[in-house]
Length: 523
Image (cartoon, rainbow, N blue to C red):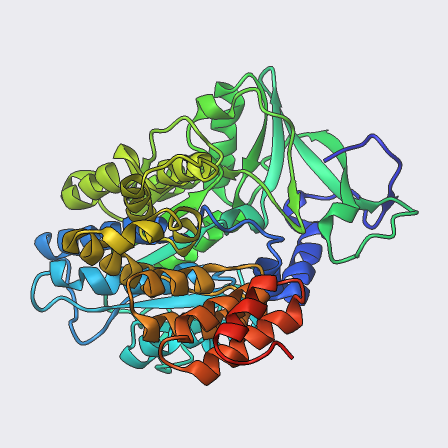
Protein backbone atom coordinates (compact mmCIF):
# COMPACT_ATOMS: atom_id res chain seq x y z
CA UNK A 1 0.00 0.00 0.00
CA UNK A 2 1.24 3.48 -0.73
CA UNK A 3 0.24 7.10 -0.50
CA UNK A 4 3.27 8.51 -2.35
CA UNK A 5 1.49 9.43 -5.60
CA UNK A 6 -1.94 10.97 -6.25
CA UNK A 7 -4.62 8.42 -6.98
CA UNK A 8 -7.96 8.50 -8.69
CA UNK A 9 -10.06 6.95 -5.90
CA UNK A 10 -12.71 4.43 -6.91
CA UNK A 11 -14.44 4.42 -3.51
CA UNK A 12 -14.59 6.28 -0.22
CA UNK A 13 -12.36 4.95 2.60
CA UNK A 14 -13.95 1.86 4.12
CA UNK A 15 -13.17 -1.27 6.12
CA UNK A 16 -10.71 -3.38 4.10
CA UNK A 17 -12.92 -6.49 4.02
CA UNK A 18 -15.67 -4.37 2.41
CA UNK A 19 -13.40 -2.66 -0.13
CA UNK A 20 -13.68 -2.91 -3.92
CA UNK A 21 -10.20 -4.42 -3.92
CA UNK A 22 -11.78 -7.85 -3.44
CA UNK A 23 -13.96 -7.30 -6.52
CA UNK A 24 -10.77 -6.61 -8.46
CA UNK A 25 -9.26 -9.78 -7.04
CA UNK A 26 -12.24 -11.83 -8.18
CA UNK A 27 -12.18 -10.20 -11.61
CA UNK A 28 -8.54 -11.16 -12.04
CA UNK A 29 -9.04 -14.83 -11.21
CA UNK A 30 -12.30 -15.12 -13.14
CA UNK A 31 -10.84 -13.48 -16.25
CA UNK A 32 -7.46 -15.23 -16.23
CA UNK A 33 -8.74 -18.67 -15.25
CA UNK A 34 -6.08 -21.40 -15.71
CA UNK A 35 -3.77 -18.92 -17.46
CA UNK A 36 -2.95 -17.44 -14.05
CA UNK A 37 -0.85 -20.59 -13.47
CA UNK A 38 0.03 -21.49 -17.06
CA UNK A 39 1.57 -18.04 -17.53
CA UNK A 40 3.19 -18.21 -14.06
CA UNK A 41 1.50 -14.98 -12.93
CA UNK A 42 0.47 -16.44 -9.57
CA UNK A 43 3.13 -18.25 -7.48
CA UNK A 44 2.39 -21.93 -6.82
CA UNK A 45 5.60 -24.00 -6.84
CA UNK A 46 6.09 -24.00 -3.07
CA UNK A 47 2.43 -24.67 -2.24
CA UNK A 48 1.35 -27.34 -4.73
CA UNK A 49 4.29 -29.69 -5.05
CA UNK A 50 4.45 -33.44 -4.33
CA UNK A 51 6.33 -32.94 -1.07
CA UNK A 52 3.49 -30.82 0.32
CA UNK A 53 0.93 -33.39 -0.85
CA UNK A 54 2.94 -36.23 0.68
CA UNK A 55 3.23 -34.43 4.03
CA UNK A 56 -0.47 -33.59 4.11
CA UNK A 57 -1.39 -37.18 3.24
CA UNK A 58 0.59 -38.42 6.25
CA UNK A 59 -1.16 -35.87 8.49
CA UNK A 60 -4.61 -36.88 7.21
CA UNK A 61 -3.95 -40.61 7.68
CA UNK A 62 -2.64 -39.96 11.21
CA UNK A 63 -5.73 -37.89 11.96
CA UNK A 64 -8.04 -40.69 10.82
CA UNK A 65 -6.11 -43.27 12.85
CA UNK A 66 -6.49 -41.04 15.91
CA UNK A 67 -10.22 -40.72 15.23
CA UNK A 68 -10.56 -44.50 15.07
CA UNK A 69 -8.49 -45.02 18.23
CA UNK A 70 -10.48 -42.36 20.10
CA UNK A 71 -13.84 -43.89 19.28
CA UNK A 72 -15.00 -41.19 16.85
CA UNK A 73 -17.93 -42.68 14.88
CA UNK A 74 -16.78 -43.45 11.32
CA UNK A 75 -19.03 -44.62 8.51
CA UNK A 76 -17.10 -46.92 6.12
CA UNK A 77 -19.87 -46.51 3.52
CA UNK A 78 -19.21 -42.77 3.31
CA UNK A 79 -15.86 -41.27 2.22
CA UNK A 80 -13.85 -38.87 4.31
CA UNK A 81 -13.97 -35.68 2.27
CA UNK A 82 -10.76 -33.66 1.90
CA UNK A 83 -11.83 -30.23 0.65
CA UNK A 84 -9.09 -28.31 -1.16
CA UNK A 85 -10.03 -24.61 -1.11
CA UNK A 86 -9.22 -22.53 -4.19
CA UNK A 87 -7.72 -25.41 -6.16
CA UNK A 88 -6.87 -23.18 -9.13
CA UNK A 89 -5.10 -25.38 -11.67
CA UNK A 90 -5.92 -28.50 -9.59
CA UNK A 91 -2.32 -29.57 -9.13
CA UNK A 92 -2.36 -29.92 -5.34
CA UNK A 93 -5.73 -31.71 -5.35
CA UNK A 94 -4.39 -34.19 -7.91
CA UNK A 95 -1.15 -34.84 -6.03
CA UNK A 96 -2.95 -35.14 -2.70
CA UNK A 97 -5.40 -37.70 -4.09
CA UNK A 98 -2.48 -39.75 -5.46
CA UNK A 99 -0.57 -39.52 -2.17
CA UNK A 100 -3.61 -40.55 -0.12
CA UNK A 101 -4.15 -43.49 -2.46
CA UNK A 102 -0.63 -44.73 -1.75
CA UNK A 103 -1.21 -44.47 2.02
CA UNK A 104 -4.63 -46.12 2.22
CA UNK A 105 -3.02 -49.35 3.36
CA UNK A 106 -1.86 -47.54 6.52
CA UNK A 107 -5.47 -47.17 7.65
CA UNK A 108 -6.99 -49.84 9.92
CA UNK A 109 -9.40 -52.26 8.20
CA UNK A 110 -12.92 -50.93 7.85
CA UNK A 111 -12.01 -47.24 7.84
CA UNK A 112 -13.54 -45.02 5.15
CA UNK A 113 -11.72 -44.17 1.95
CA UNK A 114 -10.90 -40.55 1.10
CA UNK A 115 -12.25 -38.28 -1.64
CA UNK A 116 -10.41 -35.06 -2.41
CA UNK A 117 -12.85 -32.31 -3.43
CA UNK A 118 -11.18 -29.73 -5.69
CA UNK A 119 -12.99 -26.39 -5.39
CA UNK A 120 -12.91 -22.96 -6.96
CA UNK A 121 -15.26 -20.05 -7.56
CA UNK A 122 -14.00 -19.50 -11.14
CA UNK A 123 -15.87 -21.77 -13.55
CA UNK A 124 -12.95 -21.72 -16.00
CA UNK A 125 -10.72 -23.32 -13.36
CA UNK A 126 -13.30 -26.00 -12.56
CA UNK A 127 -13.70 -26.79 -16.27
CA UNK A 128 -9.92 -27.04 -16.68
CA UNK A 129 -9.60 -29.44 -13.75
CA UNK A 130 -12.52 -31.63 -14.82
CA UNK A 131 -11.19 -31.91 -18.37
CA UNK A 132 -7.57 -32.56 -17.36
CA UNK A 133 -6.56 -36.04 -18.61
CA UNK A 134 -4.59 -36.77 -15.43
CA UNK A 135 -7.78 -36.47 -13.38
CA UNK A 136 -9.75 -39.13 -15.28
CA UNK A 137 -8.48 -42.25 -13.42
CA UNK A 138 -9.01 -40.57 -10.05
CA UNK A 139 -12.51 -39.44 -10.95
CA UNK A 140 -13.38 -42.97 -12.05
CA UNK A 141 -12.38 -44.47 -8.68
CA UNK A 142 -13.97 -41.68 -6.63
CA UNK A 143 -10.61 -40.49 -5.33
CA UNK A 144 -11.36 -36.96 -6.53
CA UNK A 145 -14.43 -34.84 -7.17
CA UNK A 146 -15.17 -31.18 -7.91
CA UNK A 147 -17.38 -28.46 -6.48
CA UNK A 148 -17.99 -24.74 -6.77
CA UNK A 149 -17.02 -22.82 -3.62
CA UNK A 150 -16.99 -19.08 -3.14
CA UNK A 151 -15.58 -17.76 0.15
CA UNK A 152 -17.59 -14.56 -0.36
CA UNK A 153 -20.87 -16.53 -0.12
CA UNK A 154 -20.00 -19.88 1.47
CA UNK A 155 -22.66 -22.53 1.08
CA UNK A 156 -23.16 -26.23 0.50
CA UNK A 157 -20.77 -28.07 -1.82
CA UNK A 158 -22.52 -29.81 -4.72
CA UNK A 159 -20.15 -32.52 -5.92
CA UNK A 160 -20.11 -32.74 -9.70
CA UNK A 161 -19.18 -36.42 -9.97
CA UNK A 162 -21.04 -38.21 -7.19
CA UNK A 163 -23.90 -35.75 -6.86
CA UNK A 164 -23.40 -35.68 -3.09
CA UNK A 165 -24.29 -32.46 -1.28
CA UNK A 166 -21.94 -31.50 1.54
CA UNK A 167 -23.66 -29.34 4.13
CA UNK A 168 -24.45 -29.23 7.82
CA UNK A 169 -25.97 -32.53 8.93
CA UNK A 170 -25.13 -34.37 5.70
CA UNK A 171 -21.54 -35.41 6.45
CA UNK A 172 -21.19 -38.46 8.67
CA UNK A 173 -17.39 -38.58 8.86
CA UNK A 174 -14.79 -36.06 10.05
CA UNK A 175 -13.95 -33.43 7.47
CA UNK A 176 -10.51 -32.31 6.31
CA UNK A 177 -10.00 -28.86 4.77
CA UNK A 178 -6.83 -27.74 2.98
CA UNK A 179 -6.07 -24.02 2.52
CA UNK A 180 -2.81 -23.44 0.66
CA UNK A 181 -2.28 -19.89 -0.59
CA UNK A 182 -6.01 -19.33 -0.12
CA UNK A 183 -6.52 -17.45 3.14
CA UNK A 184 -4.02 -14.82 1.97
CA UNK A 185 -6.33 -13.95 -0.95
CA UNK A 186 -9.75 -13.56 0.71
CA UNK A 187 -11.21 -10.65 2.72
CA UNK A 188 -9.37 -9.49 5.81
CA UNK A 189 -9.30 -6.31 7.92
CA UNK A 190 -6.36 -4.25 9.06
CA UNK A 191 -5.78 -2.34 12.31
CA UNK A 192 -2.94 -0.55 14.01
CA UNK A 193 -1.89 -0.68 17.67
CA UNK A 194 0.05 2.29 18.97
CA UNK A 195 0.91 2.75 22.67
CA UNK A 196 -2.17 1.02 24.01
CA UNK A 197 -4.57 2.59 21.52
CA UNK A 198 -6.29 0.81 18.66
CA UNK A 199 -6.89 2.28 15.20
CA UNK A 200 -8.71 0.81 12.24
CA UNK A 201 -7.03 1.38 8.89
CA UNK A 202 -9.68 2.34 6.35
CA UNK A 203 -8.80 1.92 2.69
CA UNK A 204 -9.93 3.17 -0.70
CA UNK A 205 -8.87 1.58 -3.98
CA UNK A 206 -7.15 4.08 -6.24
CA UNK A 207 -5.57 4.15 -9.65
CA UNK A 208 -3.09 6.53 -11.23
CA UNK A 209 -5.07 8.68 -13.70
CA UNK A 210 -2.65 8.01 -16.56
CA UNK A 211 -2.09 4.33 -15.84
CA UNK A 212 -2.74 2.31 -18.99
CA UNK A 213 -2.07 -1.12 -17.47
CA UNK A 214 -4.38 -4.08 -17.90
CA UNK A 215 -7.31 -3.29 -15.56
CA UNK A 216 -7.52 -6.93 -14.46
CA UNK A 217 -3.97 -6.79 -13.05
CA UNK A 218 -3.72 -5.46 -9.52
CA UNK A 219 -0.28 -3.95 -10.12
CA UNK A 220 -2.13 -1.00 -11.67
CA UNK A 221 -3.95 -0.18 -8.42
CA UNK A 222 -2.98 1.06 -4.99
CA UNK A 223 -4.75 1.74 -1.71
CA UNK A 224 -5.29 5.12 -0.09
CA UNK A 225 -5.07 4.71 3.71
CA UNK A 226 -6.77 6.52 6.56
CA UNK A 227 -6.57 5.69 10.25
CA UNK A 228 -9.53 6.01 12.56
CA UNK A 229 -9.28 5.39 16.29
CA UNK A 230 -11.52 2.60 17.55
CA UNK A 231 -13.79 3.91 20.30
CA UNK A 232 -16.53 1.27 20.12
CA UNK A 233 -16.36 -2.46 19.55
CA UNK A 234 -15.81 -2.76 15.78
CA UNK A 235 -17.49 -6.14 15.33
CA UNK A 236 -20.82 -7.68 16.18
CA UNK A 237 -18.84 -10.84 16.98
CA UNK A 238 -17.69 -10.73 20.65
CA UNK A 239 -14.82 -13.14 19.99
CA UNK A 240 -13.30 -10.92 17.28
CA UNK A 241 -13.55 -7.94 19.63
CA UNK A 242 -11.90 -9.98 22.37
CA UNK A 243 -9.04 -10.94 20.04
CA UNK A 244 -8.54 -7.30 19.07
CA UNK A 245 -8.56 -6.18 22.70
CA UNK A 246 -5.89 -8.74 23.48
CA UNK A 247 -3.70 -7.32 20.73
CA UNK A 248 -4.30 -3.77 21.98
CA UNK A 249 -3.03 -4.64 25.44
CA UNK A 250 -0.20 -7.00 24.46
CA UNK A 251 1.35 -5.32 21.41
CA UNK A 252 3.20 -1.99 21.51
CA UNK A 253 3.30 -0.65 17.96
CA UNK A 254 2.33 -2.60 14.88
CA UNK A 255 -0.10 -3.10 12.05
CA UNK A 256 -2.13 -6.28 12.26
CA UNK A 257 -4.53 -8.33 10.19
CA UNK A 258 -7.86 -9.67 11.41
CA UNK A 259 -8.59 -12.53 8.97
CA UNK A 260 -12.39 -12.31 8.94
CA UNK A 261 -12.70 -14.35 5.72
CA UNK A 262 -10.46 -17.14 7.00
CA UNK A 263 -12.31 -17.31 10.32
CA UNK A 264 -15.64 -17.47 8.48
CA UNK A 265 -14.31 -20.42 6.43
CA UNK A 266 -13.18 -22.29 9.55
CA UNK A 267 -16.58 -21.82 11.19
CA UNK A 268 -18.43 -22.71 8.01
CA UNK A 269 -16.71 -26.06 7.54
CA UNK A 270 -16.64 -26.88 11.25
CA UNK A 271 -20.44 -26.68 11.12
CA UNK A 272 -20.42 -29.10 8.16
CA UNK A 273 -18.24 -31.71 9.73
CA UNK A 274 -19.04 -34.89 11.48
CA UNK A 275 -16.82 -33.91 14.39
CA UNK A 276 -13.89 -33.37 14.54
CA UNK A 277 -12.59 -31.25 11.63
CA UNK A 278 -8.96 -30.87 10.54
CA UNK A 279 -7.82 -27.68 8.77
CA UNK A 280 -4.37 -27.65 7.15
CA UNK A 281 -2.90 -24.26 6.30
CA UNK A 282 0.06 -23.53 4.04
CA UNK A 283 0.68 -19.82 3.62
CA UNK A 284 2.72 -16.78 4.63
CA UNK A 285 1.55 -16.26 8.18
CA UNK A 286 2.13 -14.78 11.62
CA UNK A 287 1.75 -17.47 14.28
CA UNK A 288 2.57 -15.64 17.53
CA UNK A 289 2.15 -12.13 18.89
CA UNK A 290 5.95 -11.74 18.98
CA UNK A 291 6.00 -12.27 15.21
CA UNK A 292 3.31 -9.61 14.83
CA UNK A 293 5.14 -6.86 16.74
CA UNK A 294 6.59 -3.86 14.85
CA UNK A 295 5.08 -4.68 11.46
CA UNK A 296 4.06 -2.17 8.76
CA UNK A 297 0.45 -1.00 8.71
CA UNK A 298 -0.35 -3.33 5.85
CA UNK A 299 1.33 -4.85 2.86
CA UNK A 300 -0.15 -6.20 -0.34
CA UNK A 301 2.09 -8.50 -2.37
CA UNK A 302 1.06 -8.08 -5.98
CA UNK A 303 1.57 -10.78 -8.60
CA UNK A 304 -1.24 -10.20 -11.10
CA UNK A 305 -3.57 -10.73 -8.17
CA UNK A 306 -2.54 -9.75 -4.63
CA UNK A 307 -2.07 -11.46 -1.30
CA UNK A 308 -1.74 -10.51 2.36
CA UNK A 309 -0.13 -12.04 5.42
CA UNK A 310 -2.37 -14.49 7.29
CA UNK A 311 -2.91 -14.09 11.01
CA UNK A 312 -2.75 -17.74 12.07
CA UNK A 313 -2.61 -16.65 15.70
CA UNK A 314 -6.13 -15.21 15.45
CA UNK A 315 -7.39 -18.33 13.68
CA UNK A 316 -5.91 -20.42 16.51
CA UNK A 317 -7.88 -18.41 19.08
CA UNK A 318 -11.10 -19.14 17.20
CA UNK A 319 -10.19 -22.85 17.09
CA UNK A 320 -9.52 -22.86 20.84
CA UNK A 321 -12.83 -21.13 21.51
CA UNK A 322 -14.49 -24.07 19.75
CA UNK A 323 -12.70 -26.59 21.98
CA UNK A 324 -9.84 -27.28 19.60
CA UNK A 325 -6.10 -26.72 19.32
CA UNK A 326 -3.48 -25.64 16.80
CA UNK A 327 0.02 -26.73 15.81
CA UNK A 328 2.39 -24.37 14.02
CA UNK A 329 5.67 -25.08 12.25
CA UNK A 330 8.56 -24.10 14.51
CA UNK A 331 10.66 -22.54 11.76
CA UNK A 332 11.20 -18.79 12.14
CA UNK A 333 10.53 -18.31 8.41
CA UNK A 334 7.09 -16.78 7.94
CA UNK A 335 7.36 -16.54 4.13
CA UNK A 336 5.67 -19.91 3.70
CA UNK A 337 4.77 -21.93 6.74
CA UNK A 338 2.34 -24.60 7.87
CA UNK A 339 -0.28 -24.70 10.61
CA UNK A 340 -2.81 -27.29 11.71
CA UNK A 341 -6.14 -26.50 13.38
CA UNK A 342 -8.33 -29.25 14.83
CA UNK A 343 -11.84 -28.53 16.18
CA UNK A 344 -13.10 -29.73 18.51
CA UNK A 345 -10.53 -31.93 20.21
CA UNK A 346 -7.82 -31.98 22.85
CA UNK A 347 -4.26 -32.38 21.66
CA UNK A 348 -3.51 -35.37 23.89
CA UNK A 349 -6.32 -37.29 22.15
CA UNK A 350 -4.61 -36.91 18.77
CA UNK A 351 -1.07 -38.19 19.42
CA UNK A 352 -0.49 -39.63 15.94
CA UNK A 353 -1.58 -36.37 14.34
CA UNK A 354 0.87 -34.41 16.51
CA UNK A 355 3.63 -36.92 15.75
CA UNK A 356 2.96 -36.74 12.02
CA UNK A 357 3.13 -32.93 12.18
CA UNK A 358 6.47 -33.14 13.97
CA UNK A 359 7.97 -35.61 11.48
CA UNK A 360 6.34 -34.45 8.21
CA UNK A 361 6.45 -30.68 8.82
CA UNK A 362 8.90 -29.78 11.59
CA UNK A 363 11.83 -32.19 11.26
CA UNK A 364 12.47 -31.45 7.59
CA UNK A 365 9.27 -30.45 5.89
CA UNK A 366 8.19 -29.36 2.43
CA UNK A 367 9.30 -25.76 2.98
CA UNK A 368 12.85 -26.83 3.84
CA UNK A 369 13.00 -29.30 0.96
CA UNK A 370 11.76 -26.69 -1.50
CA UNK A 371 14.30 -24.10 -0.36
CA UNK A 372 17.20 -26.55 -0.53
CA UNK A 373 16.26 -27.74 -4.02
CA UNK A 374 15.91 -24.16 -5.28
CA UNK A 375 19.35 -23.29 -3.92
CA UNK A 376 20.98 -26.31 -5.58
CA UNK A 377 19.30 -26.23 -8.99
CA UNK A 378 22.10 -24.19 -10.61
CA UNK A 379 24.88 -26.45 -9.33
CA UNK A 380 26.83 -28.07 -12.17
CA UNK A 381 28.99 -30.53 -10.22
CA UNK A 382 26.35 -32.72 -8.60
CA UNK A 383 27.00 -36.45 -8.89
CA UNK A 384 24.37 -38.79 -10.36
CA UNK A 385 23.86 -40.30 -6.89
CA UNK A 386 23.23 -36.85 -5.40
CA UNK A 387 20.78 -35.99 -8.17
CA UNK A 388 18.91 -39.23 -7.58
CA UNK A 389 18.47 -38.41 -3.89
CA UNK A 390 17.45 -34.79 -4.55
CA UNK A 391 14.64 -35.94 -6.82
CA UNK A 392 13.50 -38.33 -4.11
CA UNK A 393 13.71 -35.54 -1.53
CA UNK A 394 11.34 -33.46 -3.68
CA UNK A 395 8.66 -36.14 -3.39
CA UNK A 396 9.43 -37.09 -7.03
CA UNK A 397 8.55 -33.66 -8.35
CA UNK A 398 8.55 -33.35 -12.17
CA UNK A 399 10.22 -29.93 -11.77
CA UNK A 400 13.03 -31.51 -9.73
CA UNK A 401 13.49 -34.22 -12.35
CA UNK A 402 13.81 -31.58 -15.08
CA UNK A 403 16.39 -29.77 -12.95
CA UNK A 404 18.42 -32.70 -11.63
CA UNK A 405 17.72 -35.61 -13.97
CA UNK A 406 20.26 -34.85 -16.72
CA UNK A 407 23.37 -36.20 -14.89
CA UNK A 408 21.61 -39.54 -14.42
CA UNK A 409 21.32 -40.26 -18.14
CA UNK A 410 24.97 -40.69 -19.24
CA UNK A 411 25.53 -42.97 -16.26
CA UNK A 412 22.84 -45.40 -17.46
CA UNK A 413 24.98 -46.93 -20.20
CA UNK A 414 27.31 -48.63 -17.72
CA UNK A 415 25.17 -48.59 -14.57
CA UNK A 416 24.80 -51.83 -12.57
CA UNK A 417 21.34 -53.42 -12.55
CA UNK A 418 20.46 -52.14 -9.08
CA UNK A 419 21.04 -48.50 -10.16
CA UNK A 420 19.06 -49.03 -13.35
CA UNK A 421 16.19 -50.41 -11.28
CA UNK A 422 16.30 -47.40 -8.93
CA UNK A 423 16.20 -44.99 -11.86
CA UNK A 424 13.30 -46.84 -13.48
CA UNK A 425 11.32 -46.73 -10.23
CA UNK A 426 12.15 -43.03 -9.91
CA UNK A 427 10.90 -42.31 -13.44
CA UNK A 428 7.64 -44.12 -12.74
CA UNK A 429 7.04 -42.14 -9.53
CA UNK A 430 7.87 -38.85 -11.26
CA UNK A 431 5.56 -39.73 -14.15
CA UNK A 432 2.71 -40.39 -11.69
CA UNK A 433 3.13 -36.84 -10.37
CA UNK A 434 2.94 -35.25 -13.80
CA UNK A 435 0.16 -32.67 -13.87
CA UNK A 436 0.65 -30.19 -16.68
CA UNK A 437 -0.53 -26.67 -15.81
CA UNK A 438 -0.70 -25.56 -19.44
CA UNK A 439 2.71 -23.86 -19.36
CA UNK A 440 4.27 -24.10 -22.88
CA UNK A 441 7.79 -23.70 -21.49
CA UNK A 442 7.42 -26.86 -19.38
CA UNK A 443 9.98 -29.29 -20.84
CA UNK A 444 9.31 -32.11 -18.40
CA UNK A 445 7.69 -34.40 -20.97
CA UNK A 446 10.76 -34.28 -23.24
CA UNK A 447 13.11 -34.74 -20.28
CA UNK A 448 11.20 -37.81 -19.14
CA UNK A 449 11.31 -39.19 -22.67
CA UNK A 450 15.09 -38.80 -22.59
CA UNK A 451 15.16 -40.70 -19.29
CA UNK A 452 13.24 -43.65 -20.67
CA UNK A 453 15.40 -43.64 -23.80
CA UNK A 454 18.53 -43.82 -21.61
CA UNK A 455 17.02 -46.93 -19.99
CA UNK A 456 16.41 -48.44 -23.43
CA UNK A 457 12.61 -48.17 -23.17
CA UNK A 458 11.89 -46.70 -26.61
CA UNK A 459 8.13 -47.23 -26.37
CA UNK A 460 7.73 -45.07 -23.28
CA UNK A 461 10.27 -42.57 -24.55
CA UNK A 462 8.19 -42.03 -27.70
CA UNK A 463 5.00 -41.64 -25.63
CA UNK A 464 6.58 -38.79 -23.70
CA UNK A 465 8.14 -37.19 -26.80
CA UNK A 466 4.69 -37.10 -28.40
CA UNK A 467 3.30 -35.58 -25.22
CA UNK A 468 6.01 -32.93 -25.41
CA UNK A 469 4.90 -32.05 -28.94
CA UNK A 470 1.31 -31.72 -27.71
CA UNK A 471 2.29 -29.42 -24.84
CA UNK A 472 5.08 -27.30 -26.26
CA UNK A 473 4.22 -27.50 -29.90
CA UNK A 474 6.81 -28.67 -32.43
CA UNK A 475 10.43 -27.96 -31.49
CA UNK A 476 13.56 -29.06 -33.31
CA UNK A 477 14.95 -30.64 -30.13
CA UNK A 478 11.90 -32.85 -29.56
CA UNK A 479 11.88 -33.97 -33.20
CA UNK A 480 15.60 -34.79 -32.91
CA UNK A 481 15.01 -36.84 -29.76
CA UNK A 482 12.21 -38.73 -31.52
CA UNK A 483 14.36 -39.35 -34.59
CA UNK A 484 17.22 -40.85 -32.55
CA UNK A 485 14.71 -43.01 -30.68
CA UNK A 486 13.17 -44.25 -33.93
CA UNK A 487 16.31 -44.94 -35.97
CA UNK A 488 16.66 -48.60 -35.00
CA UNK A 489 12.96 -49.50 -35.03
CA UNK A 490 11.23 -47.25 -37.57
CA UNK A 491 13.47 -45.94 -40.37
CA UNK A 492 10.70 -44.00 -42.14
CA UNK A 493 9.53 -42.46 -38.88
CA UNK A 494 13.10 -41.40 -38.06
CA UNK A 495 13.50 -39.80 -41.50
CA UNK A 496 10.25 -37.86 -41.07
CA UNK A 497 11.32 -36.69 -37.60
CA UNK A 498 14.73 -35.54 -38.83
CA UNK A 499 13.11 -33.62 -41.66
CA UNK A 500 10.68 -31.98 -39.25
CA UNK A 501 13.62 -30.88 -37.08
CA UNK A 502 15.45 -29.51 -40.11
CA UNK A 503 12.38 -27.61 -41.27
CA UNK A 504 12.31 -25.81 -37.91
CA UNK A 505 16.08 -25.20 -37.82
CA UNK A 506 17.80 -25.36 -41.24
CA UNK A 507 21.20 -24.82 -39.58
CA UNK A 508 21.27 -28.34 -38.11
CA UNK A 509 24.11 -29.65 -40.27
CA UNK A 510 24.47 -32.91 -38.35
CA UNK A 511 20.83 -33.72 -39.18
CA UNK A 512 21.66 -33.54 -42.87
CA UNK A 513 24.42 -36.04 -42.21
CA UNK A 514 22.04 -38.39 -40.40
CA UNK A 515 19.60 -38.26 -43.30
CA UNK A 516 22.39 -39.11 -45.74
CA UNK A 517 23.37 -42.07 -43.56
CA UNK A 518 19.75 -43.22 -43.75
CA UNK A 519 19.99 -43.12 -47.52
CA UNK A 520 17.96 -40.00 -48.21
CA UNK A 521 18.67 -36.32 -48.79
CA UNK A 522 17.57 -33.44 -46.62
CA UNK A 523 15.14 -32.07 -49.19
